[in-house]
Length: 159
Image (cartoon, rainbow, N blue to C red; front, side, top):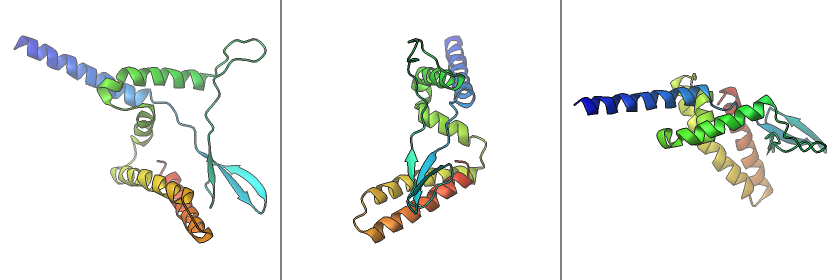
C-alpha cells in the first residue's frame, strides 16, 4: 500500500508539473499577417480581407552575417526554451508545440468561445482547401468570402 501511495504522489506531481508547463511556458504565437491585393496595390495587415494570403512571419534564427555569432532575441530564445520543454513534456501531455500554444492562448476563454474556436479550426482548413481547389472564378470568390468570414470571426474571438 505504501508503494502505491508513493506512485500516486509521483503521478500527481508529474501531472501538476505538466499543467504548469503547459499553461506557463507556452510560446507566444505571433499574430497572423495577411497579404491583401486591392486595385493592383499590395497591403499587409493583421486584419483579414477577401482573397487574403497568410504570410509566414516566423523570426529567423540564423547567424549574424558579419561575425558568425548567433544573435537571437529574447522572443526566439523563449520559443526555443518552450520547444524543448514541450518535447520533454510531450510523453506526459501528448501535445506538440502548436497544440500547447493554442491551449495556452485559449485557456481563459469562456467554454462556448473555446468550442467555437475548435469548430473554426476545422472550418478554416476546409475553407483553405476549397480556395486551393476552386475550378471557376465564382467558386474561388465564394471560397474566399467564406474564408474571410471565418478568419474575421476567429480574430474577433481571440482564438
